Image (cartoon, rainbow, N blue to C red; front, side, top):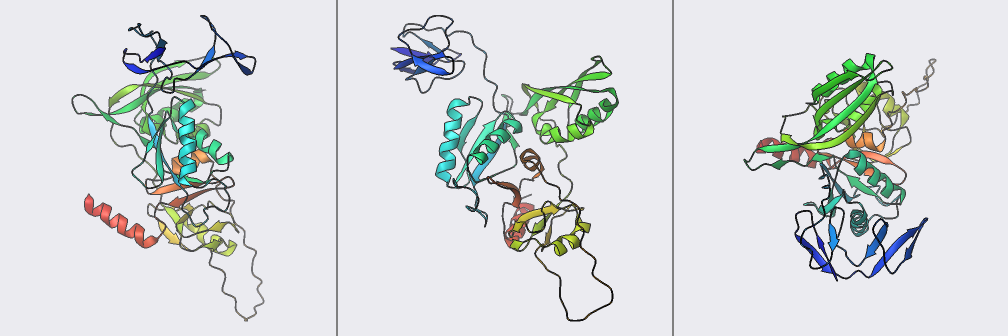
Length: 374
């Protein structure tokens, strides 16, 4: 009989160890006993996890252990309810998604899975968009279809009632000619420069204390600014008073008002409105985001509208439609790009952007309600 204590000495559970498994190469083998220095796996204690002490019943003081860094970001994983749901994946139900997330949380101590306020949805909290992006990509390759929301930072209030947000220590190594633009971009994201020194080889090391919400989506921008030569590492540092608003996406999006397949002629006419995210022939549906708008508002468009054909002949031949190659986003870029009223639809074959409310009338009612609430 043994018991499990946390770092403060509080009792977590009592139980019996049913198996002791030792590692022999890549295999786990059952053994009768293990001594100090052996790496083993224990069966029979479902609540025990990292930083807990497993001890005899008479022990009251736990062993000193490093605390687990708390989750800093949360995303909502929900059932894919788009018109194309179930056409590309094999695991599409909320029960399958829930069971998979709970199974992941058992072995990944940095994840926290809890029911969401929305129907058929779970809230998953982790240490950053990279960790959550890896989980989504893994589920996608396993055949899951799901929709995910924009990451939101987990804030808290201190004993005085003041709002606090997670702060990360960011260490950046860049070439000297790129240090200026990195400092500028980080300062726009409310980061505080605490150290700047030469690291040899015409490179500079920069150390920042930056809010987690300011770093969402910065990785791709950082690689573009440094021509792929920059190296950035992040480490949770603690909580600090809220630093105010961080400027987000400035442009609106182009939202499809029709279903079917995108037509090259329609996309050619829409190119002056902004860059496209889809190719001709791509399957679309109402409420799907097909491109970025050059202005700050969202624009409803019809990418399935064909050219009007007549029986009038002219001597001038129609020019072939030449389209600019679309802007294809990776999963991490899509998660960082969307706004609060948008979702990323993830399937084994596709990554699509969509509005949370597909019907344009529902979106107008929701925007009016939000404006009235303010």
